[in-house]
Image (cartoon, rainbow, N blue to C red):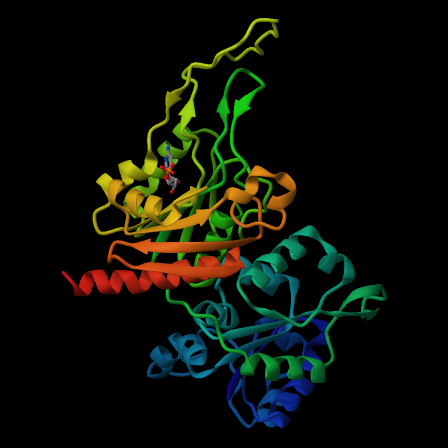
Length: 415
Ligand code: C5P
């Protein structure tokens, strides 16, 4: 198996020579790409002698005019011919560039062109490592599925004691070996632009009160995470929830059903798949007072008006898009899901039973709203009824996209 070893410009660059040897001992063929800063710490000749291969140093290294084209596309060749990209030491600067997709030298362009497994071994001064900028970058890079070989603690070259030391070469090489045996996640949603709605909506009664429901948003957020992991561009339109924004998705926070409708319609043209997991309020109070209503001893009735049915409106103008709705039901779940599929012109409706939410305590062991798990039935335009056994919401999200992609092929084939 071929490994591209990216060497960054840090004092630990000398350890990359030992790493190259440790990788070769584990059976890898190693091709080294150095940054200009790395060359200040260790000479390319060291790596050339160890690996027996040409060492790549910069983007435009052509010695003659004939070599110009080959040199201009060198990063593409390195990216294509290697199954793993290992970066050690991964400096603060490299991590920031990878995070933001900056590509101004051979290593950063290779990173962008690379579709295989990435292993990062960071090394830097303790304060640089602990800085929120570096930690945020690491969070993004981990979210992309890169393997991170954590820096160790100890005496650093700058005299400080703390985290930031490059992991030992054998430890990094073992992590690369383990990563080479792990199956890469599927990227079958590459090229899709998916619009997902999640969470409840809140419909104001007055300046401080609102009507809402017990949706936690967990199902919609799990769908967004799964879609990002499988390569889709994801926009998540979310009502108010207590969940961290899924990495890699564009989050559009909304509050009311009307705001959610507007956010969905504004982005519909770019979407290839729309998943309506939100528990949209069915009624709202038109023009609620901005002031807090005074309490009196008299009975109070609220005059509620139906909200627009976003899913039904999408069904009417969906075109070739795959449209997936949800039906949270307390009874007759499959019949209700099928009725909604037809009425709202969906391709799939995910039916789930939410009877457990009647009791708050029971809901902790239940499925549906608030729970981390779900048990659903998928009804499809092709007439299928597919039960999906109880599983984590992320696993259920995986099944929904599996069946949606299969359904699209079946619908195309039957045209
Ligand atoms: O008809 P019901 O509200 O049970 O249908 C649920 C499905 O319809 C969900 O996918 C939900 O997101 C969507 N819906 C909507 N707009 C509404 C009400 C529900 O898009 N006003």
